[in-house]
Length: 159
Length: 159
Length: 159
Length: 159
Image (cartoon, rainbow over all chains, first blue to last red; front, side, top):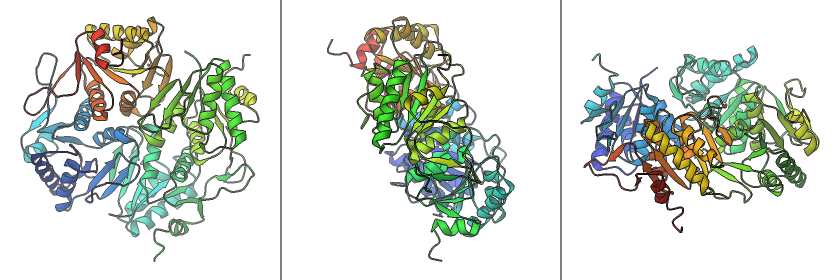
């Protein structure tokens, strides 16, 4: 079975987030990883487009019970019908989770992935999280480029 | 995007159910359809094995949040973590739903697929459902062989 | 903590189902049980109205993420936002499950409750279920009146 | 129908969080609000105990499908069986959401409540969230005491 990487990010993203997502998708596909994403627009569409451009497989885990507004680059569509609860399913499905950019929905996915605690979580851009004393929270891996994001997952550390 | 067909059935199934499921999986893969199933044992494992034997793609929508007990023939694993609520996700993900054999979990999937009302639902073997007057319930399509089950979906009616 | 009883049934129900549901709600409230229901119209509204008429507590487990179309007799509203997956939550929340009338959604709840296998499941009216040989399925308790439905739960068997 | 307030916080909480949660629960009960919480230990148990001490109603929305490990102060128990996806149900059920203390699960609830965007979200203690430029994120209401937390919801602003 192929490695599966969940990639999360905002519907309304910056052009830098979009470009990062497209590149992350392309790199993941080149390494043979299946991309798991939310299946709609913004970062979700960009990572799907990037993966498909390199011949990859993309699974869209939709909040809706039908395919309305799903992006056109999905290989497989899972219309969960469970609303925002699908965020849990996305992060549960990745051997690693890469979070690109910042939004409340995206932060919920980052937090759920850290709560799960079983897989590497990599942040590329996006919001900053500090504890009560103002120190950065431990555990999240930070990357400053798509290449670094893949490296930070540790999934290809043998390369 | 490929056609997706959800195939549901009991963990503890008869040998006839198992043989039917394996053949349904094989036929679906030969026609290029992606198989969506519950990802564990019994009918779920048989349909996955059949599809993989013909080079097909199989998605396992698991009740657990991890991959424990997932069968070995899944191409893609979605560990939903939502328990039996994953039955809804399975039936929502099919362009048609084929139900093989009888159990309470399987009946819930048949009922959810009919409740959804958007896609063909085909029953191969399994329990019988009658209305309050004792008449068979309208809507479910009945098949008596794997080949008939695929035909009854209507997805390949143009062939 | 009070006994909790889940009551399930169709949106579009017969007048007999509606009258049965109202009476079941009233009887449950008189015995101090909390009623768990789907929170919308038909049997769900009738059981809520019956329970409230006797001063009872009614919890509505909604499919939507907001309160739109919730019936007016709910004491507590849980807008799950998980769509039809909320059926699992309803049946999981009852110390017993009473199913009134027949519909595909209602059948899914009956099947999920039997699949769960931990609590008594009582059917008042509704569809008939037979195994592959045409014999009635074991396990479901049948009642022919609201009073019998409560008795059949076994929750008040000491009375 | 009574006002419903969701109160979220860590299982492993500080003694200050626990004391704050107990007081928030007591104050909510005194104002007639129903407390919605996750139903287990830490902040969840403290807010339940506080509310019950003042005769209030507490609903526990559990991740498990059964009542194992539920705290003893719940009036109503909803064993969802949907795992961490129950966090969405908790925040959807509040006319306001109060978050006490910091943990990844708690942060997911804060983020989901802000993502929902329909109800006031109040933070009492806990982690700090900054945008990409290092500015505090807009929208979350901050309180420094249980009394302030209730005031910040705006639900009793007419008082």
